[in-house]
Length: 458
Image (cartoon, rainbow, N blue to C red):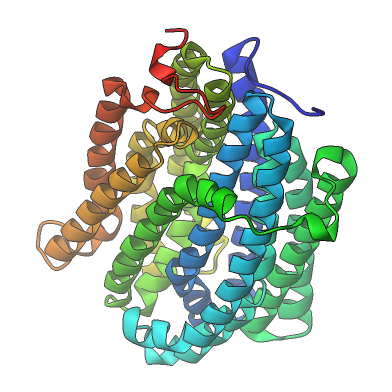
């Protein structure tokens, strides 16, 4: 197979080299999201900025479907790749592409239709920005089908060790999105719709680029139209791994929706501040999410090859690298928080909220970096239900303390950002308890043997 395997050689080298393009690609995504926010805040208004920020939690629901099921397919492909079963790699990839594209079309239609009801009754968006919010989201929803397509292509490429390719696609997409943002918002004056259309076009370009790259570079993934066949068994294999991942992300989406609603109750100034705070918080999350993706592929390949000792070594090394990277980013955000905020043209009160928000998350998210990468081990070993349980517990705790203390004299509105210390602390305890228990080792080998992974090379 023309691809890269992580079942031989230095563990930390494989993990670092694989994760760096993933990290760089995620950084590019966050940069163009940040620039998008800056442009909206600078050339439109704080209302427009609040509207763009408000769509996040509901939009994340659809991104959860794209990310979850594509990641599930990627794990299945990675396991068969590690077992050197080319026929199953190809069959699962083609079925996965068909499944995600159909799901993308359905999601695009559902998101467009449900937009106004969701933001009116579920998120309780302020009536002064409701029309802006619905307008932005409906234009954004048109591009969802391209998100689904791009995600499945990227997951398949990562499954065979090609994490660098997604960086190239995102580089093209990011530069294009920033340029179109300026053109549609600053020059053409298309309001928030212009920012959404810029995102749609850039996602479509990424989708097309990923398709042609995969088809041209890998003969294994060069499918004729009649080779995209629906196979219930293969879809079931993808869903078995992907559904818990998807459910985990949906739980996060609902949790963030409840937190967003609490934010909305504090008014437009807090919404604008929270929008900027969340954008910056994403940078803190980059290392741990990149290493989660890396460990899912790394674990899947080594599980397929029956090499679980390599997984354990990789976890220890990844923990240290993730912690160091997050600490450095946290230090930068703590020191330069005030300078960062000035880029977004916030009001004085919103800027004051945002400074407190950034300083808090610079400390809190260090805890997140200490357990999120381990999710990749559970996903790569077909135990993706465990991260869902952890996410549910952590988000439930965050929502609970937010609503308990948001009007208290002790914490008040600051619980909007300090809720993380409660949720992430719980997540850390549960995740490491599950990992150290060793239960993730006891799964059937993907090469259809009767052997338990726990009995191989330990």
